[in-house]
Amino acid sequence: MQAKAIAKFVRYAPRKVNQVLTVIRNQNVEKAFEILSFLPKNSTELVEKVLKSAVANAGKLKDFSGLKIKECWVGQGPTLKRMRPGPMGRGMPYKRKTSHLTVIVTDEGVVAKKSKKKTAVKKPSAAAEVKAVKETKENKNKVKG
Image (cartoon, rainbow, N blue to C red; front, top):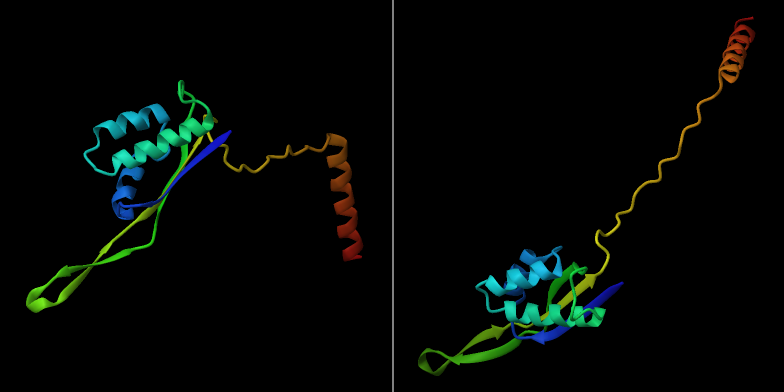
């Protein structure tokens, strides 16, 4: 089962949020909460909040021992354009970036990768091998003659 949580239009720069996400990506939820409690970044509060929401959406808020972070990513939201006073009465523009954060958790221990099915190769019996060899010899004789 998978559960998803999204935070949109959050006033954190996506680059700074992504620094936190790279640390907790593909971790167990317990370990992710532990890592987030010790990271010295402001965006850890946001990531922790969204991760808690994803765990709650999975229905395992009390016991989340079997959950793993399957995917987490951040995208850039709309940029807020602002002005700051500059020299000689001019306005100096600056931008406030926003981001959209998505976290997906799953209760499957290891996400199954696509694997090629190995088909068993049947070995021909001894009688079939002898027959095949005789046929090839006969074919060679026909070509020569």
